[in-house]
Length: 75
Image (tube, rainbow, N blue to C red; front, top):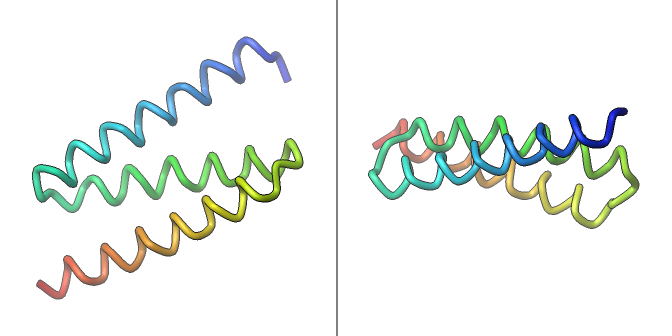
């Protein structure tokens, strides 16, 4: 990988995650979908660089996001 380009992609997904947080604060379910997108990428990235503990954390975040979507859809 080109490390400069990869670093830009990582920061993009950090930004996606923060925007997701903004939507959650505004009580908008779209935030969970942004979190899911960011979490899936960051999970893949962390396992790819052998940061397994961080990868597991993103698995847990993904589970929390899915749970949040289910709870919000049920009202």
